[in-house]
Image (cartoon, rainbow, N blue to C red; front, side, top):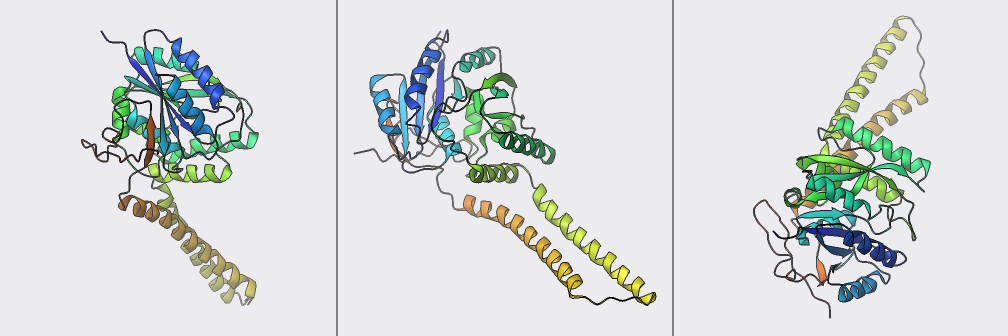
Length: 336
C-alpha cells in the first residue's frame, strides 16, 4: 500500500522577512507527521521583494518543495486556487507563510482526515496580536453573513484548513473570479470538523489585508453567497415610499387644522432622503452587475510565469477546471 501524499499550499506575497523561518519550521513539522510523505507548494503571487529568489533556492535544494510563480499579483484567494490546481496529494492543507497559523497543527488535521473528515478547518480559539477593532469587525461580519445566507460558514475561521482529495476536486470545479474560498469550502459540504488552535501574532513583515482589502473581501463574501442586499434595496424603496405617504397624510391633517408650514428644509430633507435611497439601491445592483460582467469575459483566474520543482506539472499539466468534467490547460510562460 502506497504512503499517502500530503500537499501543503502556501500563498506568498512579499514575505521575504519570514519565508526562511517558515520553511525551516514547516519542513520540520511536516517531516514529523507519521505515515505520510509531503510536498510543499509555494505560490508566489507576484512578489516585488526577494521572496521568489528564496523560494527558488528552497526548491533547488529540497525535492519536497515546488514553486509556482504568477505573471503578476492576482490575489491571495487566487493563489490558493492555483495551489489546489497543481497539488496531487491525497489530502491538501492551506496555510499562510506569516506563521500566525502554526504548521505543527497540520499533523493534528491529518489525524482528523484519517478519522474520516473531508475538511478540517482551524478554529481560532485565541488570536494574539490582533486589535479589538479587527476582532470585532470580523466577528460581526461572519455572524451577519450566516444570517443572510443559506450556507453556514464557521465563525472565527480563516483559510487555514485541510481538505481530502475528493473535497479539493469538487472545490476546483468552482471557478468564479471574486473568490471567497472559505465560503466555497462550506458550500461543497461533506464531513467538516473544526480544530481549535491558538493563532500567533505575525512573526515579521506587515499584514497583507489592510482595512481596504478587508472591506472588498467582505463584499466578495456577501455577494457570492447571498442576494439579500438586492432585497434590502427593494425594502429601502418600500420604506421610502411608506414615509412619503405618511408625510403626505400629515400634510392633509395640517391643512385641515389650518396649520401649514412652508420651508426649504423639509423639501431638501425629503429630496436628499429619496435620492440617497435610490443611489444606495443602484450601487448594490451595480455590485452584482459588475460581478456578472467579470464572469462573462471568461478570462482565466491566473497566468503562471514559471513552475519549479513540481515534476510533470508544467504547461502540459498545469490545468484549471473551467467547467465540471473539463480541464483546459493553463499556459505557462517559463522564465528565462
